[in-house]
Length: 106
Image (cartoon, rainbow, N blue to C red; front, side, top):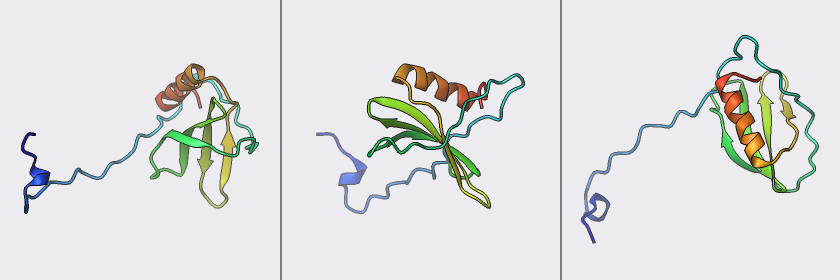
């Protein structure tokens, strides 16, 4: 096996810089609107596959449940507001996720 700094006693291993997550771009001119709905809680287990950075007041999560994907939007402020998109098959929702991050939809 090859030599690894982590195996040598006393080796200083540099830590990676703190990760600052991705941000959704602001809506572009002429962007399309996403239909945001109240959460339905129709799944007992939801897995967050991707998410935007926690440093913003509004965060987005690409979620998987029951074989379908949806986007959850959480807006933090005086009042916490959570909204979700409809649930779609993976290829369609992953495309919407990319369009949201690029500002094409909002």
